[in-house]
Image 1 (spheres, one colour):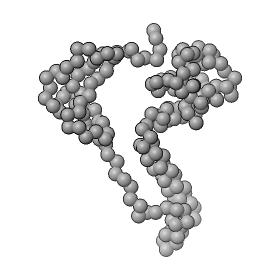
Image 2 (cartoon, rainbow, N blue to C red):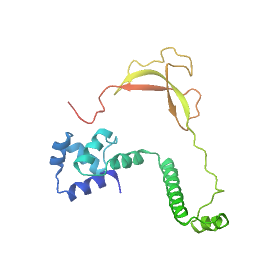
Image 3 (cartoon, helix red, strand yellow):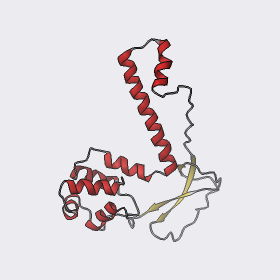
Image 4 (spheres, one colour):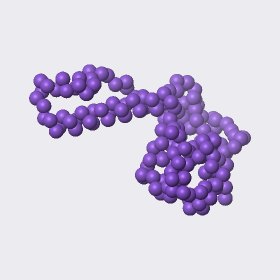
Length: 184
């Protein structure tokens, strides 16, 4: 179930209208509607999600977790969910193990029974490359952009970027509020 569907379902369970939720959290009704229908281009901010959690009586951190999971690329999300499921199996196994206190010779049988393989290798996680941040541009159309005469790969600041192999890659910092969800 998508983030927007979960929010709408909970709001309707509490018999709240979009107007009521909007006035309580200080975000516009049309924006909340686009979140609920899944038509929003950018994911809601953590600040908005925390306000929604409080107003709609969600467990603290639940909407943030769902939004962050939805924002992950699908291949990474699948790996994460698979690792999380494996982790849960191991935690449940450890709990059973502690309660039964089996003999070491029975341990292999117990592992097999719980479909766990201690020999199974985990794929290494890659932290990614550090990419130089060479300039800043205003939000919207990046006019007056240049590389500030930095040599390739050199900068005052760097950001980590996974799965990038271009040795000439660089980043720019976007500044401004043109993409804010709330107009003031």
